[in-house]
Length: 440
Image 1 (cartoon, helix red, strand yellow):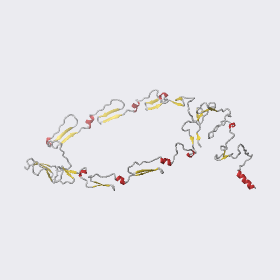
Image 2 (cartoon, rainbow, N blue to C red; image 1 turned 180 degrees about the vertical axis):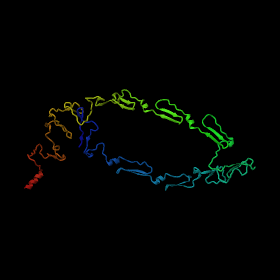
Image 3 (cartoon, rainbow, N blue to C red; image 1 turned 60 degrees about the vertical axis):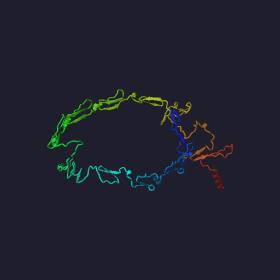
Image 4 (cartoon, rainbow, N blue to C red; image 1 turned 90 degrees about the horizontal axis):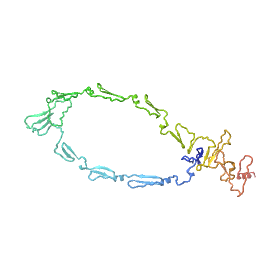
């Protein structure tokens, strides 16, 4: 059964609660008890017929059965997909659209990113035949000659020597380069420049300037020696300037250590303070900030408003006005100040007078769980009820009811049913007839 939430007390008066929570309680009811309006109830049929599917073409298909609500998608077939592929003429590729297999068959050189290779300085195309090659930078053989053997300016590499022939050719004189049997892997590098190879005795070393270190040369062994720059040289060239402020910076030129000592806690704390009248406290010894009686003037929000009454922090109010609603577990007020007023016409009011209640006694007015009008006394009770409205309910199960049917009474006639002065059970006409027949 639908019910309405309790009334609320506003400024000493009962009012209907005008908020989103002032709703009817439909507990115990279903949509069967409420006919459809413009907002229709949900059904599977309505939901399914509100949906449609459009197949815009292309491979595959999309269909919709609005009877079952099933959307069916059939993807492209292998034949559909394979029909989109082919191979270019002259590419050397093959393609079987029935199986989707790609292959190769005599790919021409023109289709290759690299269709040749180079030996030395000679380019050889795939499929070509070469009878001479030139331009090698490395080639392994027993003897190599840059020119025919014995020719002028020939260079011959053979037997661990590089033999240079002079400009006059076969005159019996050559210059050979050989290496002493090495005991390690060695390299001799020539610079990228023109010049003459120097002999040990033609080299020397010298020192210029006033910097640290020195260079010497031994023309017997060909060894150059460099006296390195020492740590003491480097450390002595460094200095530190401490320009003041918190902390310190120092330098030890004997060890090369630069030492930085950061600001102490007391130095840092000395840079902070709090403004007078801010309500803040500060201990420069411990660095602790705190609060002590922050004044209202230092607060962004220093008051609250109840109804239309503003209350500053630290102050009090005995009268509050302008409330639109008030909810409380208990409200006690004098009967001469308590009113319930009409929501649309506040001049219509109901007052309570408790003068007739016994001293130290609380009387309770119970509101029934139904809509209706309060009867002020028994003189206003109706004396006539319709037989369709009058019911007698069982005291423990309100679904058990007794009704009266007056349609059999003659029009304009009042029939009286008298109740005997004793307990008993009413018998129906059929039951009384059956007893009479049984008794003869």
